[in-house]
Picture 1 (cartoon, rainbow, N blue to C red):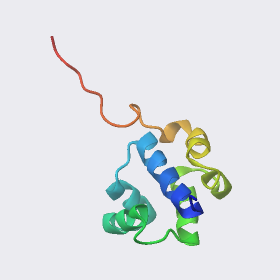
Picture 2: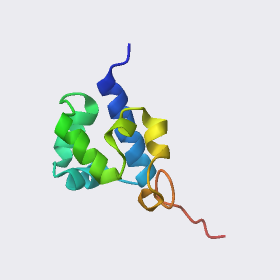
Picture 3: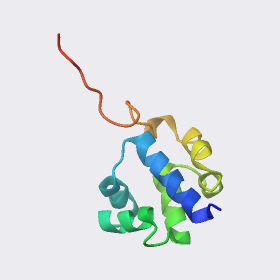
Amino acid sequence: MTSTEQYLRLTVASLMYATGEDQRTLGAGLRLSQAQISRKQSGRASWLLGDLDRLSAHYGIPVPDLLRGADHAVSRLPAARRAAVIGGAQTVIAS
């Protein structure tokens, strides 16, 4: 059975993907180190209630929307927070 924390890790990963953020950028936004984000995302450390408040402020999404799952949370992202190219940089191949 999947735990609430596993769902939250998936939601955070999806939000990072949709915004083009890496762990270092998210950590800076939450006042955490990249190593702390890595531990939380790998399940070696837990996301805390205070982290939810900071995630909510960072992404501009109410806490209940963060807890409704990855698809819902990504759909609630403000347009200004979405990456121009979802999932990474655009590659241009010259002919």
